[in-house]
Image 1 (tube, one colour):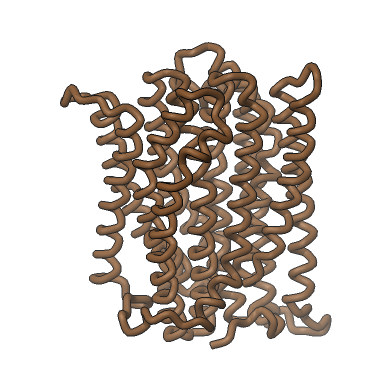
Image 2: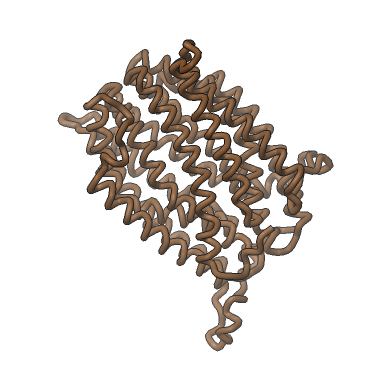
Amino acid sequence: MKDLTNGSIVRHILAMAPPIMAGMISIMVCQLVDLYFVSGLGDAAVAGVAAAGNAGFLVNGLMQVLGVGAGALIAHAVGRKDRSDANLIFNQAIVLSVLFGLLTLLAGAALSRAYMRSIAADQATIEAGTTYLLWFMPALALQFATQVMGAALRATGIVRPTMLVQAFAVAINIALAPVLITGWGTGHALGVVGAGLASSIAVAIGVLVLLAYFRKVERYVAFNPAQWRPQPHHLKRILNVGLPAGGEFAMMFIFMAVVYYVLRDFGAAAQAGFGIGQRVLGLINMPALAVGLAAGPIAGQNVGAANAARVRETFLKAALIVTIVMTGFMTLAQVKPELLLAGFSNDRETMDIAYLFLRIISLNMVAQGLIFTCSSMFQALGNTRPVLLSSATRVFTYSLPAIWLSTRPGFRMEYVWYLSVAATILQAGLSLWLLRREFRKRLISAPKEKDPEQESAEPIAPLAREPA
């Protein structure tokens, strides 16, 4: 366990963010590798896999329920030096991870085709996306356990083991993808089936490795079968924090589904170009997301330790780092988008759409980074309802106008991207305002005559504390 209530906040962020980012980038690279090899199967296959991957946002929403809920409560317990509560929350979250994993498998089997029919441009795309989803669902189901274990480690200030396991699993996926998708070395090409199967095999191996680490090395939180009996009070604690955060991903699922819906009249090339551009954009956003995820446990432990000044400082330092990083990526996307998109498709129309998408959407990179940072702060405070509110605002201010515009004569796809930029900037402004209000409610201002040397001990209102 690493104590994040003392020491340089910037140093803590810079120490934790790179391993977090490496783990996330390795996962994103895995998805890009799948798209790269699937691109040889045609636009319908690329569009199908990309559109099917959007369903991952919905499943990721359920993962966030567990990861955010358990991570925030464990961080608070660590800050209070309450190890017993940290272990209880961890084991109750593991029980939920099994239930959510089974629910994912059942939902995938029952709803994959209906989902693809609702957004795909043609029958070939429907078939490719449905097939990919059915073979990819085991990977999503298994990641619930990984999410809980990773959140628990992050809450205790440990990020390296999760990153190493993710990188190992991605290496397996990258090795399997060309073999299973195109038949390298075997002569038996499985196409989109191979893309989903490679991911599922890799994730299964990763879960086993992380489980072995927990059983043999991790000591602060550990598996305890005696705590696996569901306890409604503690399950409610996890869900109260996690459900609004999961709702944020559900909002993103709706947002992406609307994009695919309004683009379907432009054909598979448009959906494929958007899918490639969106995956690359996700890769670009990883540094900002990693900084936010690193700042969350730091702020969370200080919430548990009732150190309000350090919570505020964590946000300010994280926001500054994110703004600098995302300004650099925005500049690169504006000047040289081809450096970020090279090699994903040989179809000129598809890549022209991807270039257009990235140039326009990159205008909201700084705003998106601030949204990530605010979300992490809400999670650290143990109140994620404002996150859901800001995300819902973005969805409604984007979706309704986008659908309406798509019915108007002369509708062009770039209208979708400009509307998205405006909605994201609006969400960032709302998130900052809500966070400022939450700080005023939760963090008690220090008296003016207070000794500066004791400012770090500025208290937090009792509302921010979790019951033992």
